Structure formats: C-alpha cells, structure tokens
Image 1: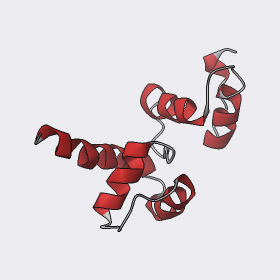
Image 2: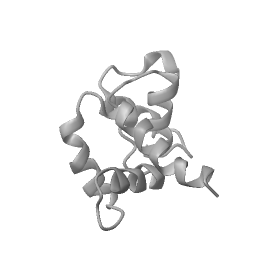
Image 3: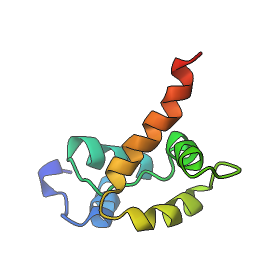
Length: 97
C-alpha cells in the first residue's frame, strides 16, 4: 500500500492504513497526526489523551474512548493540538516524580 495514495479525508485515510495487518486505529491516527501533519486527528483511544482530557476538564474519572471522542467534537478542526496539550498535561505529573 503506497503511502502517497492516502485519501485526503481523515476517516478514509484511517480505513486505508488499517487494512495493513498490525496497523490499528491508534497507529493510523498517530501516523496521520505526526508524519502527515494532519491537524484534526484525535487519538481518543490513547490512554494519556483520555487522562489528560480528564485533568484538563476536571472530570471525576478518565473518560472512555467514546466519551473522549464526543468531548473533542467541539475542538474541531484543532483536535491534533488538543491531543498534544492532553499529552503534556498527562506527562507533567511524571516530571514531578
């Protein structure tokens, strides 16, 4: 599967990439966000994104992947930036240890 044939639509590109054995949705989303520079990718299945989102919004517990996707709908078309913020929020607690 040539990567230069990725569809422009993010969901179609995820479907294209996940046809490769061993590539799941999370891997496809991370590839599209960082390697392809697609700014509206939201890896809601990432536990650090879920936990960072919970901390950012002062939620009582880490939201599910489905709930994390719902929350981020309001952040379109900048969900990729929000994911990076969520990772930083999550990671900052480990620097204090």
